[in-house]
Image (cartoon, rainbow, N blue to C red; front, top):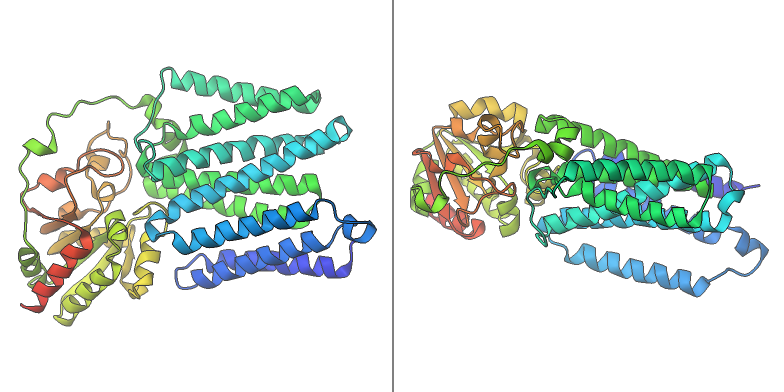
Length: 463
C-alpha cells in the first residue's frame, strides 16, 4: 500500500502544477508561475527517486547511472537557461519539448520490450500511443528548432507528391499501431518507431515560418498526452496529472492561436500542399523606398498626437526594449498618447513581446492586443514598426497566394505615417515582401534597432 506521505507529496506537486499554469496566464505572475512549476517538478522527482520497491526491498539498481544522468541533465538545463537569449527562447522551448516527448517514447519502448505480450490490451494500447505521439513530438520539435534557429529554410518545404507520401505514412503508422496491439512484435515496434519519427518530420516540413509558433504549441500538447499515457503505463499518478495538464493547456493554446491567425489548424499544417506558386514581378532592389534619418523620425514622433509602437522580432534581437521604453516616456512627457500594439504571434512564440517589454518595466496597461488596437490605427499619426514584418503585411488580406493569407494583421497601413526600423530590405520570416514598405507615406530607418532608437531618443530630447 502506498504510504500516506507519498500521496500527500503527489497531491502537493499536482497543486503546484495547477498554480503554475494559472501564474503563466499573465506576464505579471509568469515568474511566480515558473517557480511554482519548478517546485512541483522537484517534488515529483524526489518522490519518484526516494520511494520505490528497490529502496525498501533491496539495493537500488543502477544508482550511479541515475545520479549521473540527473547531474548531467541539471547542468545542461542550468547552463542553457543562463545563457539563452530572449530571442532564442522559442528554440529552447521547442528543443526541451522535443526531449520530453522523446523521453516518454523511450520509456514506453523499454516498457514494451520488458513486458511484451504479458501486458493487458489497455496497457499495450497506451504504450503504443506513447511511442507514436512521443516520437512525432520529438522529431517535429527538432525540426521546428532547426527552422527557428535558421539551420534550415523557414519557408514551407513541399516534397514531390508530399500530400500522398504524408497520407501513406499516416496510414502505415496507424495500421502498424493497431497491429502492434493485436499481435505484439519487437520488429513491428521498431518499424512503428521509425514511421512515427518520419511523421513528425513530414508534418513540420510544409509549415511556413509564420506558423511555426502554432506547431510548437501543438507539439507541446502532443508531449503532454504522451507523458500522461506513459504515466498510465507506469502507474505513476503524477505523470498522468502533469501530462494531462500540459496536453489540455497546449490544445487550448493551439486552438486560440489558430483562431487568432484566422485559419483552421488544417490549413496551417497542410496549406502548403494546395498553395499556388507565384512569380514576383520585381525585387525590392529595383523598387524605390523612402529612407529617413533619426532626426526625421524624431520630428514625426515629436509633433504627433497619437503614436502606436509595433514591436517585433528585430526589437528582441537588438535587445532594444529599454530604449523603446525610454522613447515612449519622452513622448508621453510631451503629452503624446502612445500605445504598444501586440500581435498574438509577434516574435517567435505567443507572449514573446509581452515578456520582452515586461523585462523593461513597460506598464502592462500600455500593451494593447490586436483586436483592441486595430480600430485605432486610422486615427494614428505615426505607426512605428520596430523589427516586425509579417504581422503587418497586407498580403495577409489581399494576396490569396501568400503563405500568410487569412492571418489577421495589425493595420499599420491605415496610419497617417508609417516608420519602419529595419536592418535591410530582407523579407520577414514568411519570406515574402511587404508592400507597406513601398508606400509613399512609409519611411524606413535602416540599422540596428537599438542604435537607431538611441539616435531617435537623442533627437527627440533636442526638439
